[in-house]
Image (cartoon, rainbow, N blue to C red; front, side, top):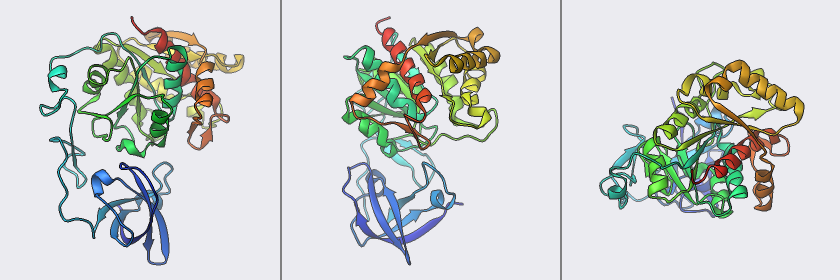
Length: 358
């Protein structure tokens, strides 16, 4: 079961209204914790808080911090949210949101009968860390594009947990966000991926969309036991809605685990087992030996038969990220140590920009 501890807030870092970093005293130990004001309400130094230390005790990566989930000295009553759609339903953390498609939403009438995204190109990534490069690839090719980001619930549920999203919005690489399923905290909220795509296009005005889960992909070392498998059925969802479905490859030559060397087995599984419709798979321009290995893996897996495969140069995306001061990393590896992963996403973005207006 989850590990809960009670401590006292000793310091609160200046932050935003969506995520707060604080120090909590637990006996002789001080832990760094994170709180989401939308869920816990206001906090003050000296407040007693209940924190979840599961991530620390499991020594997790992206989730290896404590989370404040209850303020014992906070207000006894909290104003309800603006909507009636509940996310994280039937859990102690369930929270209400104003879903874009809900009857009380100002977007309800616009979205009520819409079943298409009208040819909008959509890049679907298998890792959250590829988000920025995909967006940069679009803007490097078509600078006036309005970009929407759809965050699924395959990993982090609060969008506020993503420092990358905050940086990309400040840098002008993302214009509007939407959190789908049980994910929450976007500019728009949606009940599922389909309605989230429609909301970004018809309520958010996005010309192109990038889809990726939040930080914290789950993998088990098995063929099917990964949340990255969602990439396949999301590509199908884009096609079903009349969009242009574009797959970004997860490529690495520094991850020495055999299943992730070259094209990750997560990507191959998503494209060959989960995806049922034909999409465009973008192969980045790479050094010859790496490009040959990537194409070999794709051919062996049958990706060339199931999908349209194109080779695209994504270097412009990396240049734009540098120009905007964005320094992405993945699993602790900065761009300079793992360029293939980011150039793959950037290449998919470049291709998406070329598909604008189809």
